[in-house]
Image 1 (spheres, rainbow, N blue to C red):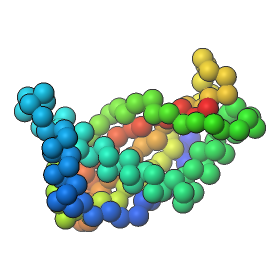
Image 2 (tube, helix red, strand yellow):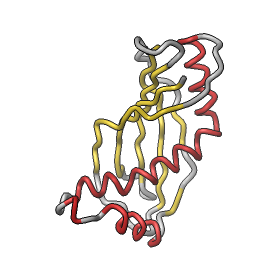
Image 3 (tube, rainbow, N blue to C red):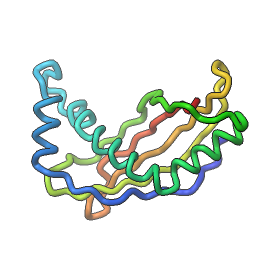
Image 4 (cartoon, one colour):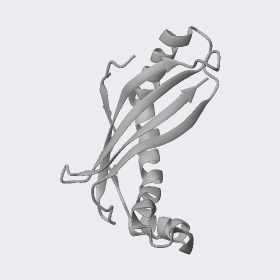
Length: 145
């Protein structure tokens, strides 16, 4: 299936200095050796995931369950796992005081060839700042058993 489905918008979230400090203390370690782009991707991931969790209960979760049911039948869903993040495009840094919203689309879904009862759903996540400028877009693949 490649048919794009409806777009889900998250509620806005304002990034605080505490958010930036927490991510910096956690992820801006000498191990990254000055790789700022990777550090930025790592820093924005928890914010994107937090926005994703907020929108799941406003229709996205029901849509993913409906898609899964169409692919693998009426088996009850027991768990959801992240299968990876790909196609990162970082447009600008995220700063304290930015208000972030994100649109999420289901862009692909299929039944797993290897795991009976598992649907693989690819989401396209695009985050915007308060001016409507893109911060990041990324594909996130999820497996639902």
